[in-house]
Every structure is written in C-alpha cells, then in structure tokens.
Length: 310
Image (tube, rainbow, N blue to C red; front, side, top):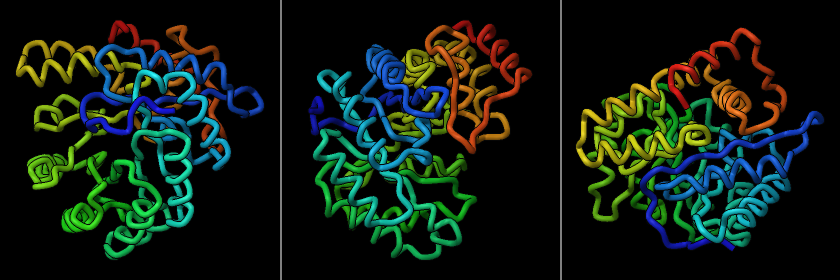
C-alpha cells in the first residue's frame, strides 16, 4: 500500500520513465531500479508513474495497473505515488481512477481526454463532466493537467475556476499553459483561492523563470534524470538566493535545451538515452510509433551531459 493518502501536492515531483525490452515488453527489473533511484532523491515530495514520461499512451489498462503495483512494492513504503489517469473516455478514466485508489496510489494526475482535441476548450461542460466522473470514483486528491493555452486541449481560465469550485478534490494543477502571462495568472489566482489549488509547473524548458513566479512545486519528466538539480533549484528559489539559483540553472540549461528541442515528442526518448549514457539504464527502447534517436542526436546529448556535468 502507499505511504500515505494525506500529503501536500507541492515541491519537486519527478515523473518516472519506463524501460522496455527488445520485444517492447515492460522490463520490470530495470523499471523498478529506475523508480527506486528517483524515489531515493533527497528532497523530493512524491513520484509520478503512468505519465507522459512512461509512455502511458502506449500502455494498456492491465499494464498501467502492473506498473503502479510494482512501483508501490518498490517505493510505496517511504514515498507517496501519484498515478496518471489517461483515457479518451470519461468512463474509462473513472475506471482507472478507482483501480489506482484500490491499488494504493496517493493522488491522481488527470490528463485531458484526447477526444477533446477538436474544440473541447469551447465546451467547458465536457471538462466538468470528465472530472466529476473521476471524483465520483475516488476521494483521492486530483491534479488537473492543463495543456498549452494555444491548443484545443487546454482548459481556459474560467473553466479551471469552475472546475475547482465544482470538484473540490482537485488540489493542484500541472500547468503546461506554455504562456508566461497565463502561467503567472494561474499562480497568483489559484494558490490564493479559499480552497487553494497549488500550481505544479511543468515548464521544464524555462523552469527557473516559472519557479520565480511563485509556483508551489514542479512535476516533470526531466526529474527522471535531474531530480537532485531540480530540488537544489527549487530550494534556492524558495530561499530567494538568486546567485545560487542562477548557478544551478546554468547547469540545467544544456540538458533542458537538448531535451525540449524539436520534435518535442522525443523529450522522454532523449531522457532514456541520457540514462544510458550516464550508466543508469542498459538500453533506451521506446514503443512505436516513437522511434530510436539518430546517432547524431545521441552525440548532442553527450555534449549536453558534459556541459551540465551530471
């Protein structure tokens, strides 16, 4: 069972990767090792499994349950686990939420259904219905994953306020608005509501700027590689130690530039390769349609590692 169901959704929360074998089956031994290494990072608040970084789009319900189960076996005694709820349909999302609760997750990261991609932002009642069904299936604290404000999968500001009012178990937002002005508005508004909703930034390509705005935490796939640097940066910003924060940020910069360069969808592919290059994973295998990186790109990652001194 999980460490606790009562914990604050704040601080540094790495989202873990998932290892596969040559037949694209889950490599449980390597995945467990990676999850444990992330969970043992000093200063983190929790870890996330079944997120973007673990290729949740390519994992079945049964695999997601297995991933959560072995993650809890590995680290559930000493750190809270957040489980992703990724489904195109709200009924399936509620099923995943219930399974996560029964299995022992401490909180849920709720992705927007891809079925809303053709204009869901214009139908706020769709978001409300989706979250209501999840909340009806579990009392666990929920994290609303908000996608870039420029796209059709986003929840507009007014929709988010209505969501928080209607579904009080939403305790945090994983903010990927990708717009600094909107991001700052979220931080200033949501964290000061009568029922506060913490902003967990996932703007890892400009993390220091985001944290300086006052985000209460971060939830990021890059934490699968540089969790300790994220903790150092978060603490330096919290302590208002600008010189120290800039120094740590300079170390993060080369890797952030490498991870989040186009095509953006390869970010976690690149993170796996960095774990291989630093001796923490034996091989970097991704499930199709994701593809192995070119040797040219792997060389760029080698240079980023040298510059970051990780």
